[in-house]
Image (tube, rainbow, N blue to C red):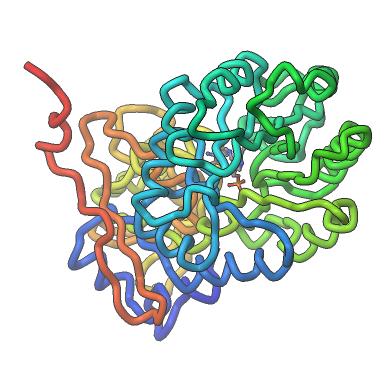
Length: 410
Ligand code: LLP
């Protein structure tokens, strides 16, 4: 969706002060482009709406070092879900104490790395992991802070593929298990149980499931005053189209903050910071009429942006140069040998021709991080438009054919 940074100016689509056609011409397509201004204003909005909370940007949404560095410099901590993400965050300059380490299947090696780096919080969601972690805390570190992740058995209002809080999901620990762990804390002398973590899903369409989950947390921790922190995870939604109604950040905060009074709060937002700060530029390779439909075949596909194929997600598709004329309905597809390689179904756009450039909007989160080399396609480059909106730089180059085979032996 268009916004204050990504908009038309004088008939040309811009990212702040930069014409996107210039980037497409100089860097080629496909290419991801991000607005520093927009991501920082999103972060500031979250900081203002949750004034006393610790904001840990969820690196899984977009883990480019320049993006991480920008957000870390603006005061964000990091939510990491693998040793690789911790490594990235450290390279980007995060203070290890400002990292929360989450994940349903952390390996011993990952736990060791996180411990040796001095990561601030371990979000734990497995009893065996708890035992392993306790046994690994050596003499050099006196104890580590743990937040147990509750599975509140609540189904959030979002796509079934990104709901994580229902009882049959692999995520979290049920309330009885957590109660038993907290009652037998002496079994884990090297761990400090100071927090409870929840994350019931992403792109939450209302705050009611989160409210219910927080109430479940409050009931659970009532007998355990050592639990002073509640980590409510991510999930703040963004609209992907004008008719997608989602609560604003401020409305979400107003719905849940009164419940959390007296507690330290951690938030792990990903999408709400970076999704609408980014887009994917692509070019129409060919058009063809077939089976009663018109196809526009792009140079970008599901290998670059998998969300439509994986979640039936909608990304608005708009031309880089505003065109007149009656719109037509087009199936916007990629070049990958898969029937699901569709980037936009029944897209209404002014007449398209080969060579036209398009932008797939709201693609800053879960775009590049989920890109793959399927069909031996090099992953696209990433460009960051500067905070003043007037300059831009390539923050990740386009992969080469050599990159595609670089890890192979023999
Ligand atoms: N914290 C935890 C424990 C998470 O699992 C996630 C996302 C977040 C925070 C950040 O959530 P956010 O603020 O971005 O909603 N690939 C999917 C989204 C998967 C989200 C996974 N977990 C998509 O493209 O929609």
